[in-house]
Length: 314
Image (cartoon, rainbow, N blue to C red):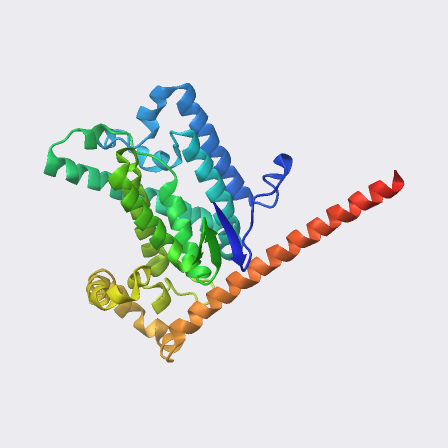
């Protein structure tokens, strides 16, 4: 669905036997889990009652908050999840590392399920419709949306082809959220995916914005303006959103900001330091993409030379 324009992003290999070539072990392992859980649910439909998130049963079956994210109930769902995981993970794991990516997947998956659970309970008490309590909710879309937020943070200027549109990486999460909201009005069967996608985007942004530890500075979060909450919205809405976001930021993080003020004084007192940090992230993303492209070209040349040698011998 997506192909790179500049700089190049990894594309699906052409031979069936080489599909998993070049992808990280973590992403391949998670892809196998998604496939196996999908097959389990298809072979034993009753397993959905123990693995998916069913709000009325979550209190005794608390593990659903973790397992629900790995349950894809449809064939298109598991295909999209596996392809998205392999492609997005291949972009992010070289920059974050295996440990950080696995931590990110766990945190986003669990926090998204918690938000969906609380929302379903709240909507039930408002509407008194039991369908909100007993509809199985599951899917890896929350994590996939979170990975797109990671791409927005590290590679905001990378252009991707989305059908006939060319769109930069920084706008992909916002576009996915908008499409999900619009589609949910016309396709009622997809409404259950909407909170998973929206909470996946929001919870991943909270983690990356305030809690992810930056190895280069030893500090937590990404305070750059390019990654603010209002950056997900068109510029015309930012004057309205920025004051609201500032209030919530002070309520949630005011104490930690004061505690870290002495620690961060030397690194943040210079004007433009947030922009410098954002530029560093973009440069790392650019170098990683260029390195993967060079490796891919070298592999192609090696294959071509091997084929020529074989033909010469014949």
